[in-house]
Image 1: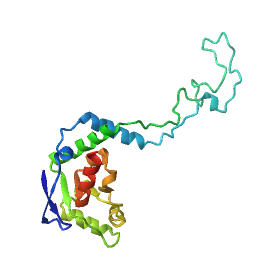
Image 2 (image 1 turned 180 degrees about the vertical axis):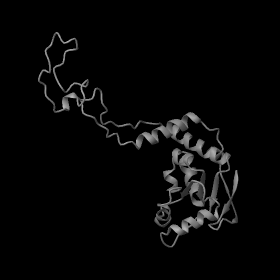
Image 3 (image 1 turned 90 degrees about the vertical axis):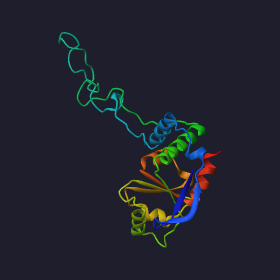
Image 4 (image 1 turned 60 degrees about the vertical axis):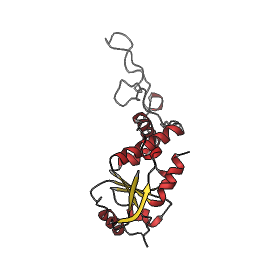
Length: 209
């Protein structure tokens, strides 16, 4: 699959890039996508939730009422979960939500996500670019030149570039990542994926292992 390379003005250049079928043209596996997205979201959870159970509540254990003859159940502590202000029964405890996912499953999920975007013509290849200084206006102009100002965009660049990253950081609809950090969730979450020219080879190296 060949795609034309654009410059930062949104104009076509004389160059074309081959997007190989083993990454951008596979039969998508929805279950692998589900597992990878689930794993990514689970890894983002802090898991610091905690509620106090009856052993952790500071309340009296004096017997509240006589044991027999009241018509109700026996009660011997205000810490009991049945009373307002008592401990919670089987409350949440701190835990780790992350789980292991095989590398081949992750790779298939990412190639499936990229294939979906290629099928929907939602991939743009851009000449490698840089800004002289971090400036949001430069990044906004770039998005407008690509006619993507009303869409969620994911820019994948070949190597770390602080000027580009800082220029995009406070734009809620845009995200910039390096090719080594691509993941299924970010790809699917964006309406359009913009690949810097140098990132294509990096992605091929990572996903063709």
